[in-house]
Every structure is written in structure tokens, then in C-alpha cells.
Image (cartoon, rainbow, N blue to C red; front, side, top):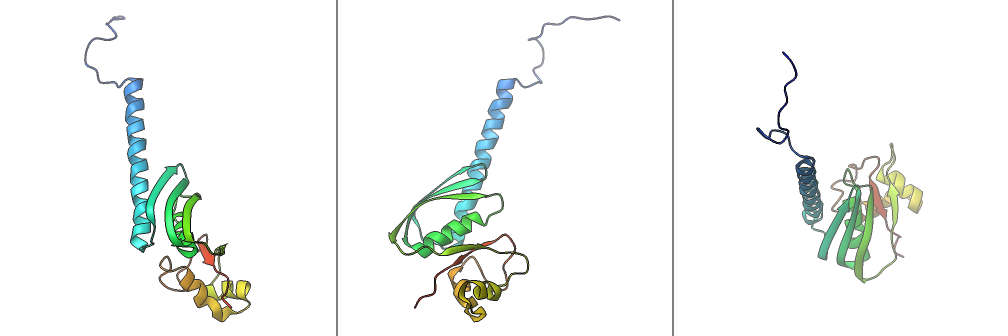
Length: 159
């Protein structure tokens, strides 16, 4: 036995070149990005949140959202719907509003929180929890179904 020499470029090509591997990885990343965008669009569509000219861009854990809504509340709900998706850390808001209004406060739910406890903190009245619940529909289906880390809209009370 000994050392045998062969032509490097001859024979069966079972190994992928660096260029081929890079192209396949780029194609997989593009397909995953498209899949994530479709899923995020599905979140907004599934909640029935009204927005025209919706466009989304995603880069790593940040989503940029473009479009137009009729109200500030709809704009905030869209931002929260996207931001409360696992894997999304930031939402870059580029949504325009037809009828501008004051922005609501945002609150991150902590362990042990309830809508009543949050209402007590913001409105000095625990019984005002329905205001928070209504402000976060359709993302919330029941006042007791909140979780730590979730971000909620806290609108100003109307006089």
C-alpha cells in the first residue's frame, strides 16, 4: 500500500462547492424570511385589524410595518399584534393615521398581574379593567388571558 494520486476535479462530484453551499443557504434564508412575513401578515389579517397598503419588512428580530389606518387605536393594535409575536423584539412603526389622536400608553404585563391590578395602577380604579380589555381586543379574547411579557395598550380615560 502507499499513497495514490488522483486528479482533484475528476470523478463523482459528491461534495458541494463553497459557492453552491452559500447559494443554498441564501435561498433557505430568503424562504424563511418570506415564511415569517407571511405569518406576520396572517396575524394582522387573522385579527381583522384594518390597515390599507400593508407592507412588512423583517430583519432578524425587527419588523418594519408600513400602511395606513383610520385611527390611532388601530395603529397601536397592529404594532402590539406584531410585537407580541415570539421572535420579534422591535417593531419599527411607519403607519400613517387618517384621524390622529393621542397615543395610548403601553404596559408590559408582569408575573402576578391582572387587568384589575393594571387598571388600579393607571386609573386608580380596579373596576375600570374593561377599558383595558376593550382597548386590546381582538388580541385579548378574555380578561383573564394575559401573560407575562405581553404588551398591552392603556388608553387615556375619556372624560
